Length: 360
Image 1 (cartoon, rainbow, N blue to C red):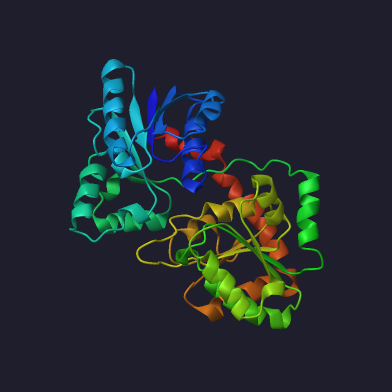
Image 2 (tube, one colour):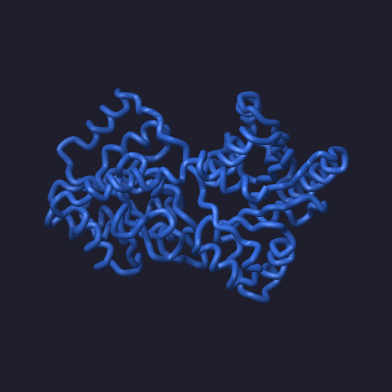
């Protein structure tokens, strides 16, 4: 049996939640799995539908870490057949006392603290005492080494994706009606924060409008930058070229991706927050949609530059504009998209889980 400790798990929605669900679910096809996850008020129906055991830990968030650690430590004492522990975050392992194999996932932002700082010392105390550190990208691995993590412990395993399911034809038709007579079609699906760089995309859109008067940029997500994004669109007189969507179903999101020509997310580093990998690039690729990502972060693991998309400097507006225009010119995105669809198959969980099995 293996224990999975996580602070982020469905039915809560998010990228980390999807990652830890995919990992636990894929591992459960090969091993007995016990998940310790945070309480969610709608967890009962969800937990009953899965093929592995989930123990929810509630209470005041400030104290939840201590309660979860206590429950995990007690469970280990009572169950001698446990082979190892996999954690979503270094904090999830900080209070775990065991000589069993320990594996900790790292993602980028949570380890990006100044070397020698109090937080850095806490991180290194955990990560340099586990058996394996699983990095989501080469970028995150290099970041970890720079912060003092033992390079011999680090293994790069990219996040996984599941094969796409057929999108309901009615949902596809509704998406097409929204985008009717609009071409070419750009899309971003992400949290609305500074790091994702929506501002630069919208500024590039102003110039692209001169060449492609019927261009449309669909922005899907929610977050603190929503009002700033909408204000910039209005300021630049781009209301007819901009479609904002939030609180939509997974099927609707996928329909809009599949009806687009190019996924654009040239992320930047913002206050030490950085894109560790970029699972959205892989998800877009599944629908034959190429991507433009930023050079800062792990996008280069998710996009094969010059083949499945483009990597550019997210701080350089001219570079963002020229890369978008290059893929739109003569419908070049079609060939890139064809390659992307094949390229992202390596990220399917059936392939990713084999890499985990090598270290378990």
